[in-house]
Length: 441
Image (cartoon, rainbow, N blue to C red; front, side, top):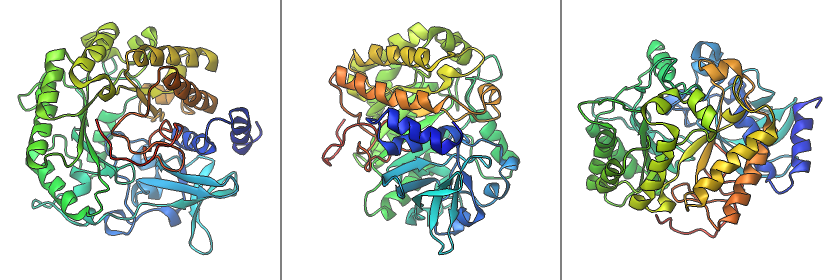
């Protein structure tokens, strides 16, 4: 294709059942977007909610390589609407790439737009600074540092352990920059708490609850790095679980409680449930047996792929299949040096994994892979996976859900183009819209 515009339009024509909004969203997530200085935020002192770096960098450069975007953070997310493609409201997580063909900039009237190949293709909305971000904890820490919100305010993201005990080339997942992201923020002098104190988390949640008068925040996620030993004397189930216990005791029923952790033995999973967690995300990362071993060496060494999958199925006995939602990193199936060479092969493998879990009533979800440059796979694959892979995955995902009679998973907000708020992939944008209703788990 002679231009990115031609590539995108060709895919929209070839896959008309995939919402056009999702095509642009996946391209922005896989390849990033550049920001004109006119589109950057004034950090926590401004009117726009800035990017919080809530767990990974999700950037195509290190902080020193981002220029002004490292000093004046870009917005946490952007909303695309209108333009020549008449885009419905689409929430996209910001992944900065100064060399991207996509650019956000203000026109002569100060209105933000998204430009592709020099042509304005949509209007851009940015999240307003929430009132709760304007207040600090008693120790001076910001709410954004302790309990940032994403997905246009829907989800409170509590990364309570900001490093991972899978460490080094022989253990770290080959696409993951959690440890580097912690190091780069500390090197830049930014506040970036390694282990968050329970009382700090509760105080931040009290501020959110007090000032989120519209009750836009509906769920929280407890997450962080894998724990192979202990943190603060606690194993993984007890460490993440004791935050849930404290939150549910202080704010019973206020939010849907979710935890992202390893696939743990059933007794440990039961502890999560006993602590008040409602949704469990034991992420399986990549389906193919060989790629799991090569790209998730720590998880293969400590648990093993087959045992990981058995534990996921066992956890459905505790939480119910609908409330077990493992994530995979969409795109690493095609990452060199070991990934599939064709889109057909990659989609066939990924679909095999979807069918395995969905046949048991478990609905996986996925994050669109961002090839962060400090990771082995990011260095080897700076362009990520082909856009066609991501578009065909959306088609395969919806078809597989239909085959097994499944609906959109709980804890992700509304599905459907123009309505979805899940920002790090388009799977919710690509599912059928449902009438607004209170989420149940």
